[in-house]
Image (cartoon, rainbow, N blue to C red; front, side):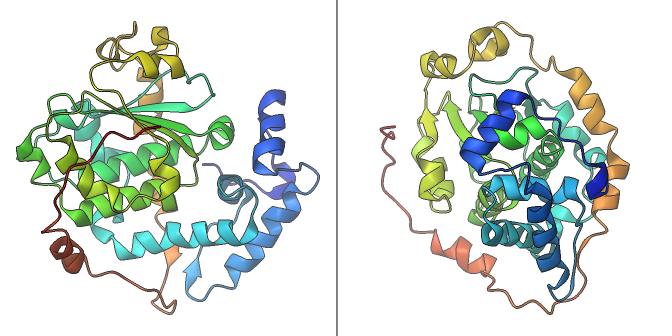
Length: 313
């Protein structure tokens, strides 16, 4: 994301998207810069935090929290806190470090948007081989792709739609997903990335889906749970949300898999950009935070049982 001064900022939103931003996000072009400056001033006063404070960086946080200063401020702090608390995910994080995940076809960004204007990510965890690399590569790669999507102002306004295709997933893979890894993934999705997660579809859920979902569900807020759809092997509801002509063939669509090569090439060539972003963050431990013990989290789930019933959404 390019660093520009406030005076050089140029809004790239279409007229329709700007109207949506006004209506749904409380964005006011006349006070936009004032909001950015207010957030910048607050962040500059946080002890030990060296944050990016240019308008291109801060504006997505304001939009993601509907220009609520307090919530946007907390989101930026979350963004930097998670980097400090999870070095196994964020240290030296850049696209070239997750090349193997992209090459394996585990995550794909579709060319076209859904009916609501959302960017669409397809995740295929069944293609992950736990003997080759750890589950930590899932939140690492998802974070990077979504961080790249944040650059798109249209996506800042309309949000993201994730399709999780569970075909091919096995119990062997599930046993490698610890509650700590699940918590990190969910936390990044709903509390760290400055994007609106508008819809989350599961398709081709296996018979043991309730076991898998139980690991993640405990960390999801009600807002996210209400946006989850279970489709099984039928794609009717998914096709209602997006023209099937824009979906890949394995989702009942007409597009070749991994057709958005231009976007992936741009993503894979942005190492330098992420290297620069990695220079920001908390420079010491002066900010007091409440941290959860990962071992306690893992231990606490060891007795969870019951069956997850299909959400009535």
